[in-house]
Picture (cartoon, rainbow, N blue to C red):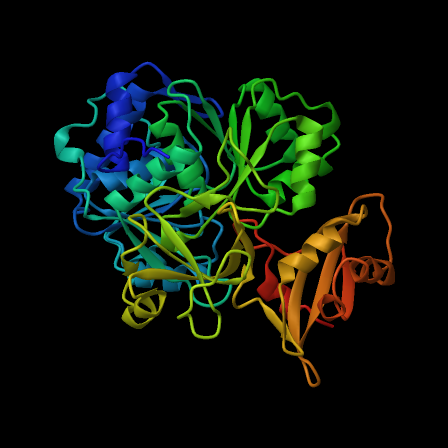
Length: 506
């Protein structure tokens, strides 16, 4: 497959869009509507303010909810010569403190009145300048009639661009360092498998833009395509369905939680999707049954992909317009090698069809974890990024993810992949969502436990669901226990929180 043009940075990408398509609609969020000329001017205005405050060579924390402001702030942090540190505005003070101490930003752009708008918290982290946005304070759109991006605001490709903190669901968050070249290259790698129509897309971003998935599949994708990014401030299924129609959305980056929630909404049956041509799924594994139900109901395909923060983030995708395989995350993006090696030693490359640990290398991979040389050396070994995921290639070169290596259950000497058990549970018509975790067992070492939420108005007993799995999987994979709950706990980015599930045992 051919590699599309690569920009030196995403700021170069935005500057070119503003120059080539100045009056093209660029950003939409509520009543805010900006052209590319206005978008570029706002980024330029804020970046000059940040540079004057000493941003160059340092880090700028961006702690804002979904809005036009956060889009401007992320690009402006890059253009100011700083490293952008985008953080979840829903974090508590307890969660923010260690991350801010680790990142040591010199400037913070925060939501006025939000948790991060705390002078003591910011001062303890070394923040010298605070820019408060919203709630009667300033907006970042005041420069829309000012001068645009000039050559002095275009970063060096090899300079640090992003310090992206991992979710931290299995331990303390780590700061992933990515260069401008790595981030921009990954945009073009994704474009090779999922080509966009320049000037012709309307991209909906409902996932939080501080998250690496929403940046890659929303913020950066729209700028590369010189198309419109429609930002949804907060998720509500009925509002999202209405927005897909009203804004004539063509591309929608979702995740399993969103697709399941939309189909569970009473408004879904009457929803109109007049322009939607393609959906993306990422951030977590998409159950095959969810994909089939969505495509049967809407006629709109979902392309599932795979990646992680450390990989910039995209490693694979099911290609648009070519063969897609349900349950697979597709093929590697260009310039990327992916290898499956044995779990025990990591020294033996495995043939197609055999599951093992996934390792990858390519220009989009991180430089390392900030201030963590030992953990960097563990993740980046022999020129490869060791992902910690278990997967297998099929004969056509399509990758299937079995599970996280840390979540794999070894029961009586056999490997049990929670995702496989979850997929079996999802085939029961009453099951809305399912999660499987391991627990210690004196006889078998570990056994599988399942937690299930049922569809509204549906009924099923715990025994019935276990028997359903028993008819589909080998005996050692069948959960020894199953609990039915109203809803599954989630992390702040919408993934099922298995760490919390392990702590919920009766």
